[in-house]
Length: 420
Image (cartoon, rainbow, N blue to C red; front, side, top):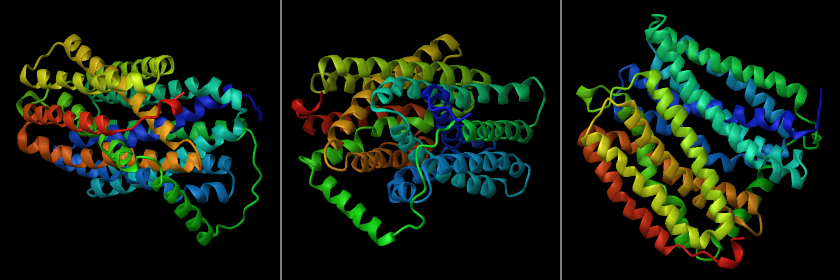
């Protein structure tokens, strides 16, 4: 069946975008913790895995000029399915760390390539009016994929260990085989449902032409109004949240002797991987609605406060540790709801900033910049900081760095005429 209707392929396409990202950037964190790595080792190793999402604008022209986006989607999904399943076979080996990291990096590059082709396919595969109709669907199913990955599958891993008596190698191996099978099934499904909306007219890739095009995009980006304050905002707005992202799962699951809250994988998957993601989704929806109603300029500071002030819940939990799942779950949901609200404003700023000449390419540079400054680099150093200061002091440092977010927000310029 080669149906053109978006409901046949938009939900599954963005489900397939979320699963490998979840596997590489979060599930790996929990697995490495169980295999005995320190916070510093985990955040440095998994931080490097974010590199493909930072540099993906460098090869995005290749996706546009070689083969079709449909071909890239199918190829990357099959590739990720095989690589994810292979992770399972590395875990019992003496070189499990080196082997799994190599496979995770392959998956990361394939996933970043899949993101480029999927977002491009969404634009050419749907009429303009349907793109607006399905934007909520794609975001919802992306979040569902995150719930399945960092929620359901982490919970399943915990049950396989506690309920079925599996070893950590077998239980985590089973999880990655499941994710690999899911990606292979999605690829098979998309083989029949993704519409053929392109013809492969380009048989070669002209490096010189693409380098010239990339340079022109950089010139457009560099000559945007208020570029210095915009660049500071793009790079540093998410700094506190970037520090939290990898440490919070470790804090929640480390033993009480290590300063953590000692959540089991089942409880972690429920609280952080499910309830937290739901809070994040609700925050994004409410934030988007607020900006559409009152405009980005009026909503910016309230939403900035929403993304920063709730971080204090982790200061509270680290100084007043508790075993109450209700209390922990409430704190996580509050923080993730606030993050969703603030990130909605941040994303809409990137969209506003990118409008004009070469908007798609400029937006890809913006997203790469925000991932570099707001996810990758803070994430890599976060474990080294928490390891040397302890979780309570680490979370105080995060709260102090919210002042950086306030500073770049105060400097950024938003043209009220361009935000509608």
